[in-house]
Structures are given as structure tokens and as C-alpha cells.
Length: 237
Image 1 (tube, one colour):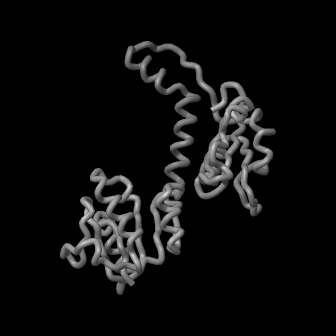
Image 2 (cartoon, rainbow, N blue to C red):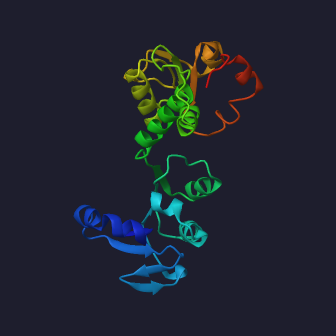
Image 3 (tube, helix red, strand yellow):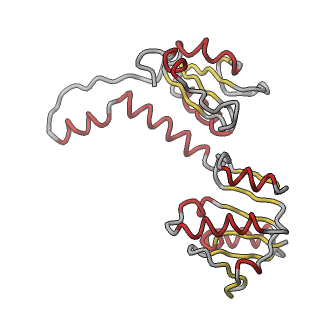
């Protein structure tokens, strides 16, 4: 089995790859889009691989040649059968093209906790008025600052995949009441109430916080329109 992955990813997890797949051959891609095998540069048209690991390192390369070369290699490969992406979203057209050529596509939930904490941080920042507090502190103005608690608020979490579940779990710990939206509930969702996708409009007016964690596809594209915003609770997030 030959695995294509970014060189910087290999440097980070080489020991784990050796432990899990000691017999795998590796095709490494440098940040500038040049491919190497056993340290020797190999023209892109000569590389062969069965698995492509588009790790998170690939999406933060400063050199745009790297990401382009990686995706082009997959699109032109006659041997690749599986691509794993380190990102949660797979709505970019390149993923559809890769899938259409028969490549199995999987994605990662490794960022779910970080994304959930980002959501909680954003709500806390807004409710606690951190920017205003910091500005007053810098000006040495010791005045009371208005704030609001998450406890007692109602959250509408649209999409209960890995990210939505992590958001819901953390918001509940803060004392929020969670309305969860999922097409096919399985019964173990960390929410207080389940809402069907066609029932979103009926509960928007209850939500102090609305969090969109649904995958972007034809059923969710442009979900938030003028009617959606008009139905939201005044001063909601």
C-alpha cells in the first residue's frame, strides 16, 4: 500500500505511521508541491499511491502550490481508492469531482472539540462584553459592565454530527436548554428537545443562540434567508 501525505505531516506523526502501517510505502509532498520517495524527488506524473491523506497541515500551507499539486495528483491518479481529509467540510467542488471518479472520501472529526470551544468562546465574549471590559481596564475606568449568563438561555443547534454534539454538551454544562435538529435522530443526542428539520421555523423565536453545524449540501444551502432571520428572537446570536 502506498500512501500520499504532506511531508510536514510525516515529520509530526512518523512514529505512529510506522506503528500502524509498518509495511506501507510513503509518497511525501513538500510544501512547494514537489513529491519525494525515500528522499528522492519524483515527477508528479510518475507517482503512484493507493491512499491520499489530506491532513490539516495541507490546508494551512503558505505556498499555494502545495495544495494544488496534492489535489491535482489525486484527480490524475489511476490507482488511488481512498482519500481522507483532515477538514470537517467536504463541500468544495474538488471533493465532488474526486468522489465521482470512484474514490472513497472520508473526513475528520478531530477539530470538533476546538470548534465547539470556539462557539462557546464567541457566545461568552458577546454576553460578557469582553472587548468593552478590556477597553475600560486599559483606560483605568473601574466601572460596572453589563453582562449576561449562558445559564437559562435556549440554544438551537442545527446539525448534531460531531461538531453539533460537542457544542451541545458544552452549552448544557453552562446551563443552557438545547433544541437539537437532526434528520435521523438515534436517541442518544445530548439535547433537551429534538426538532425535525421542517420544524426549525417554529422554534426560532425561542432561541437565544442559533448554531449552524449542518453540512453544506442542497438541502441546507441558503437555509438562512430573510424569513429565517425575521423569525429569530430579538437580540439573539
